[in-house]
Image 1 (spheres, rainbow, N blue to C red):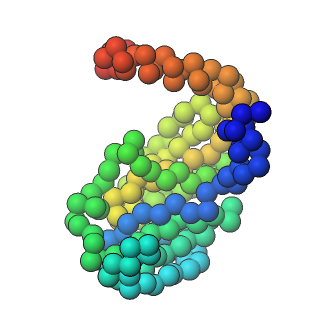
Image 2 (image 1 turned 90 degrees about the horizontal axis):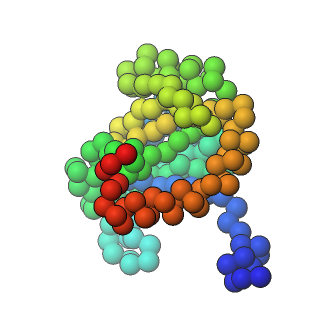
Amino acid sequence: MTIVQELARTAALRGIHHSAYRCRDAEETRAFYEDVLGLPLAAVVQEEKEPGSGLPNPFVHLFFALGDGNYLAFFDAPGSAKEGDFKLVHGFDRHVAFEAADEAILMDWRDKLNAGGVPCFGPIDHGFVKSVYFSDPNGLPLEITTRAADHDSIMAEEAKTARAVIDAWTARKAAGSEQAA
């Protein structure tokens, strides 16, 4: 057994406890995630100094509970934030994808967001999931997705060729032809 296999066997990561992002304003962010998306505010940590460095930088760290026991978190740290931190970024750069139980709930969310003045488009059918897209007040792209009925079998088939696809992509990039296809 290789060291990587042994580590995976003995110390496998269980999942994501939280994913954290900057926010422009704690209350604006709370209102969006709690009042609009219905994610309960689970905790707020307030500090005067950055952990690790000890540098003065007062901040609050907000945690919103997800239905699976994990959290989406935000830092409101006005002393180190720049306005450019909150420009809408491309979804390829970063985004958060929430999961809905089924397509009817996905469509309910799309309609609710649009009716509430949060532009939301889709659904887009990706084969293994269908998704709708929107953004939060901090410029963070968001997605709500629902799994296709045969999601697990599609992913199992994808896993069989995943490494070969990466190898081919790497070779294509090395040849300078990633723009052609």
